Amino acid sequence: MDENLISRILDEKGWNVLDELGYGRYGFVYKIEDRKSHKVYAVKVMIASEDPDDDDDFSETNIEDLDKEIRILGKLTEYKQCGLVPCLHSTFRVQKRGRMYAFIIMDYIEGKTLNNIWEDLSIEERKNIMKLIILGIKTLQSIGFIHLDLHGNNIMITKNMNVYFLDFGISCIQQPCWAPIGGWYTPPEHNKNDEKKEYNSVFSELSDIYQLGLLFGELILQSDIIKSTFGDDIYERCETIQTEWEKLKNKDEYSYWRKIIPQMVKCNPIERPTASMILREYETGEIISVKEIIEINNKLVHFYKESEGSDIIKTSSLISLN
Ligand SMILES: Nc1ncnc2c1ncn2[C@@H]1O[C@H](COP(=O)(O)OP(=O)(O)OP(=O)(O)O)[C@@H](O)[C@H]1O
Ligand SMILES: [Mg+2]
Image 1 (cartoon, protein in one colour):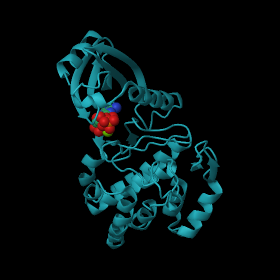
Image 2 (spheres, rainbow, N blue to C red):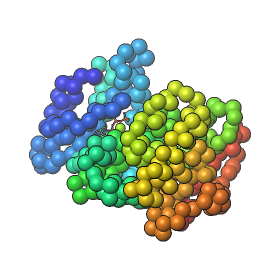
Image 3 (cartoon, rainbow, N blue to C red):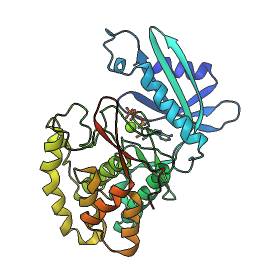
Image 4 (cartoon, rainbow, N blue to C red):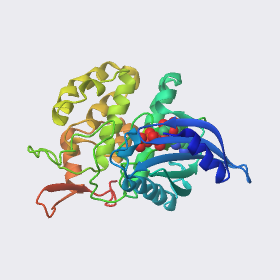
């Protein structure tokens, strides 16, 4: 990964690099300024290699993955979700030394990641942020969006306590959502090759609920529950950690969340409350029973046969979840 090369390309295109904002598996993110207008943006740089022998870690990203993130961000921008995601400004690619460098220029979000800010928040602020995250994801779900890589570094909180979602490398914006595995909190319904077929093998908006449940649970319990089970069978992992969520019961100060989170992390998606149900529980203080959740979800879920014969779940958020 040649950071000098990236700076040089940006410089040639008229951008000054102001700061390094972060990096993940495939992307480097910088704060940049348009030399002419002095407007500030963020740029995510991703690298794909066509050479299978390229021993740089980034060679795993292929051109299709790059396109996917750009396409999703483009759609979210088209649907005017700029209050919840950094909207797309422009994109360009440069081919150098057998590698493709894709630059995604988007709104710069001034804030901190949820992981970084959590410690500094009061309990009231934390509860409010969790509610805002559910509200935000509900809004994004209303246009058929499923994030699928929700974790504490892909959510940002601004000074005014606004919530932004980042990183759409494995997101879906249409249903059914057959996304590749690879997120931090992989939901147990990722069982495309699983023989048990206990759960349906496609992701839905309830997969995002699962990820948020894990995230909130880990933050409140201040533990790395998931990390400790990496490498285990994906179902067993979910079943094993179910007992961990019992610990939330002692967290009196987190009122409804301590009861809602164990529901959000149910291994079977149909037993998880939707974002609307969570918000309703939050407002009314009444916790919906698993039986009721299943009943409501069943009304919303359409099962149908894929050509290869597996049952898949189609909880379309386009069918009203309210
Ligand atoms: N628009 C933005 N404004 C400000 N900071 C950003 C922005 N986009 C990303 N960041 C920062 O950069 C970090 C990495 O960004 P992002 O999650 O998009 O890339 P990534 O983790 O490399 O992607 P992947 O998970 O696909 O490897 C974020 O956690 C955040 O701190
Ligand atoms: Mg990320």
